[in-house]
Length: 258
Image (cartoon, rainbow, N blue to C red):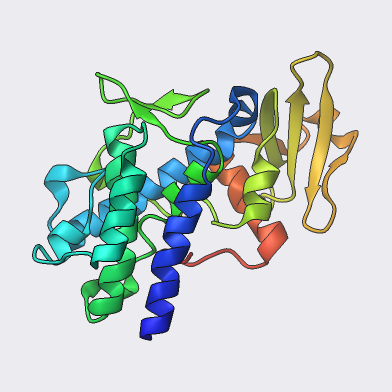
């Protein structure tokens, strides 16, 4: 990475964080619950891998990884001042430490590109995308993660480290997962594709749709047979994300791929 590329990377992280609507409209956030949940799952997976690599297990899942990569590292004065100003805003402690880590990691990579992170997936990118899709999250007193509209426990470090990649960091895939109302996904028992969804909008009624990589969600009558023994099975949101990814991007990812 050249100095110019490094400066652009740092500036880009700060620009993205400043652009987040940290106090966004609740209805808009609720409409992005599914992608935000999957992005958090992907972050937990990546965070576990980084924690194992840099012996940061004790502070998993939300931490500033640069404190373990290079304890003596300091930000350049200009970036440090800008980051300090940004972090004075009202945010939860976990959000602040990960925003701090994202900015510091970008600069650390500029000054010390020879580190063990080369084969690891980008640590903070899933969280930055989660913030961009609805602002911050909270952690309650019992350790559950509250993403506004959904709450779940993060699980164990070991369990997350052994997971396969959860969701592609691709806006078309993420957008295709989000919809207001209750949704269930289905796929063929034989080849697991294409993906269908049954949507129950908040205003009532029902929509049955199939996903096309070129056209997005399209109405279909085929979904009406899914409750019977017709060769279809209900799938979870992570499997739906995988099938949507294949439809949009082509071949499925290898483990650890962005």
